[in-house]
Image 1 (spheres, rainbow, N blue to C red):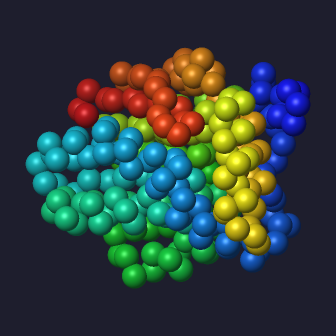
Image 2: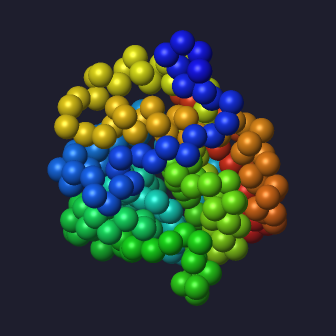
Length: 243
């Protein structure tokens, strides 16, 4: 502990409120709605997908590609990507996977008019049992919810069903990130879990060296690299030979 800052030397095991099945359903809906608005700004997923997946999509021969979003939440990533594909005239099928039934119900209502986005309930560690292949697999803010062995297993399973690019983005744990988020968290409004869970997620996040060790533990077969993005994120990309 440094003053009012929590210990950042190791990953926290504190659960986030939105992960608890008995949490207030109204607050959960507000949180999902809010995250869908702030994620494009704070998570940096558009920059990463634009760097590693979109250029690969533009090199394809125009056949329908398949995209899997693990822990899709409110599906804001998927709606944005589908609109990008529509503008570029690139056919895409998107599968959104989440293990929380309340989140799945919320997401299905949001995308019910989008026929090429399918929301499924399931565990990412059982991906191979689906018997399906995906050109691209993406996970945003997922691994920090898991223990290190669980996170490595998800990475390993995700890469096994991925034919081109696996891209994983998560929270970088640091005192600076925690302090900065604490300053802006009052702006996120009341009635949601965002302020609390945002701080908790930073304490559960990863350092760069931890993400490197995670990639090694997953025994990834593609050309893997780990990097950082602003503000406060660490990512992993693994490219297969086809990608």
